Amino acid sequence: MSGPNEHNQESLDRYSRQMMFPEIGEEGQRRIRRGRVTLCGCGALGTVIANVLTRAGVGFLRIIDRDFIEWHNLQRQVLFDEDDVRECLPKAEAAARKLRRINSDVEIEPIVADVDHTNILEFVQDADVILDGTDNFETRYLINDAAVKLGKPWVYGGCIGSHGQTMTIIPGETPCLRCVIESAPPPGMAPTCETAGILGSAVNVIASLQAVEALKILSGRKDAINRNLIYIDIWEDVFKAFKIEALREKVDCPTCKKGEFPWLEGKFGSHTTTLCGRNAVQVVHRRNERLSFEELAEKLKGVSDVRYNRFMLRFTVDGYEFTVFPDGRAIIKGTNDIAKARTLYAQYVGN
Amino acid sequence: MAVKVQIPTPLRQYTDGQDVVEVSGTNVGEVLQALGEKYPGITERLLENGRVRRFVNIYVNDEDIRYLNDLDTPVKDGDEVAIIPAVAGGQA
Image (cartoon, rainbow over all chains, first blue to last red; front, side, top):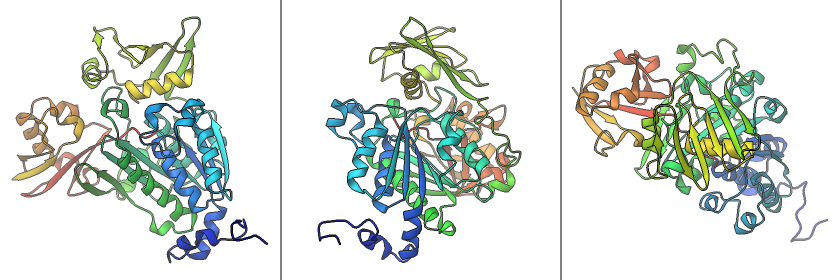
């Protein structure tokens, strides 16, 4: 018997307010308790998603993240605090420590790694749902490939400035990410959080929508999922649900119609290597469209002095010197850490 | 035919910072052409070889034009055209 201040792990008491919500109920809660989740990325979106799902009582939560916590993360990454920064903790580990204190019912598995085509199947094969807490389309198309191939539901979310978007993908039932967003914005064409900023509120809204989609799926209520592309701008009070369901029939999607999984096969995406003895990493980004230096320079205007000619573009941020080439390749000086270089590339150059 | 076009943040440098602009046209292609005439430079960011760029989606009254009639999708007075580029961030 447990006392009034003890928590009995077999009991569902702590979820009483969630079970009282009739769409979930006790049966839905029992299903959630058995549910297995893989969360790719544990930064802004990921910490909010992990927080909601852990409190909601999922059975198992695997958190994969390649990064460490920095001071400028604390503005919006809700699971981290100043001690975590001082301890130089990886995000996945710091999140797991916090989440275990929040709800010891939930089995948390932190993994400090870069999700890529060699490891993603292992990370998602035993999950009931995959959540996107990443910041780049390369990883999102990789998740999409893996999810469609294995027939697993996943929830996309992205946030910049005051706006964000999310959609839920049930392979075989809804359009996939590639049906809706046919290709990633070329480097330099899309703003990133580092060039356009990001508001914590926007992240909280999008991540909360993603988390509730996971709860619908885990509680056996796929019928209730969001079938639109939701778009919000919290500064401009824009709340839109764009209808995308018919795209599944209409678009000749290479992923869901033809069963092509180029990201999963490692044909697309960055192939990154350290440049020996130079304290530099080369990020190679395979893509067809050439990079526009003019657009990239415009995007970086507020961040750094940018110089470019027609062969290369150079700028320095936080002591890292970027040299970017028209084919999207970049050499980042100031680090030997591949994961760090890929993060920097995504932050300042793009996807 | 006056149509309201929602301009996403990264493209507002072309529209003097305006988030919604009004232009005329009888279909989406004409609307985008009129937009480019009024705000030079913006069309190149949206179209490539006469086709909507693959990372940009265009909606007429919340419907994706790819399952309507693409750039030939007709528009009428008061319709809303939304330009929605893919959103990257979220983790770092």
